[in-house]
Image (tube, rainbow, N blue to C red; front, side, top):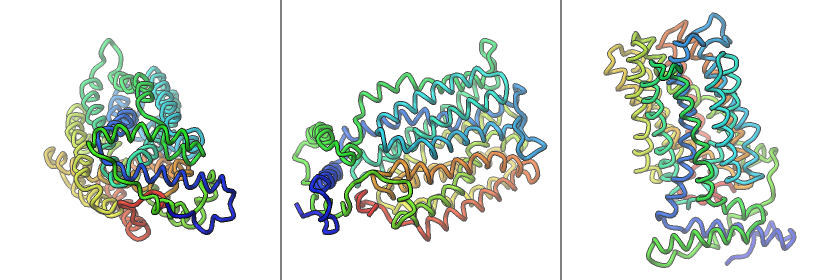
Length: 481
């Protein structure tokens, strides 16, 4: 194994040893073949994320039911109308913003597995309570509280997955995670189509949809028992013996399934990338080279991508109603559009590790802009569904690309903190996008909504296309240094 970097020779021997051990752990992970044992871990995390996506997307599908029940109106006379559906959407993303901005750093402090479980339980409890409320302000308040848990969970899952899988399969792993998670979208759309126009047992249909989403708590502990703590995080925290034990168990399973000895780790390359001791990060570090440019790029990207992504995904049934479709039929058509959600990541699995991540993001944003403009010009249900499906495929591929991309840009010691910070901008943007979409819809109709979305996607393409670094098939430490 090669020696430690020369710029670390004056550090204490224990720090040298920890940096070397962390680098060795990373090298052992990155040489693992993609066997069933690896994919099972990814699947377990995906199942936890399924409930978060269910929560994230039921906003769009319970919207007509909230309006029908008299609790909300579609539009409001003032921009910040808290009795309008935009306020419900805004409450969702306000909670997501608080979770990602304020609390994701806890995953860097207490571990990925601990925060994965805690946030799933948090969301489930708050969502259950929200479903029992009888006024718009109370629903908004509990929606915000539930959003905090979802915000923590989504960043933790991204961080967790990036650290569990070897570098040669990160793209496919994120595509698979999104495939599983996005099956929640047609599920919630189907449930909304069935429940929202009805009131089983005298209970509003939207409440049934929300209550079913609170079932995530039932599987939280089962997932926790099957998924180990991130060994990269353990090694970075100085718990190298524990990390080695956990990794040894995984290596034994992988080797048994692989059927032959595992490839040798690239210790030389790993130690070269560990150019600095793995100390606990400070928040100020994300504003220092080489992370400053990446931080600014991802802040701008997240600010605008949320307008395009959630501007359509959270408003599908309402946009269809504005096109003259009845509430019942809009939910049916929205279900057809929602059913396409898992197919974007499924398609992405075929090329996610072969096409550069930033290229995938740019092309997906372009597809959303073009298909959105064409959607706005349609009046026939078949064409509305066709372009709705194409927008959805573009959106899910964009999601696959950037969720993998942004966790690759920062080192393990600060990954959840940095990603939570830059990702929080998308939550802040999405929070106000609810009011922006409602305002555009009221004054300019559906074409105005998609003019806003197209402008946002243009900024996304410029930010990543010109300023984003390349990341494909590179070790996490190599990218971050």
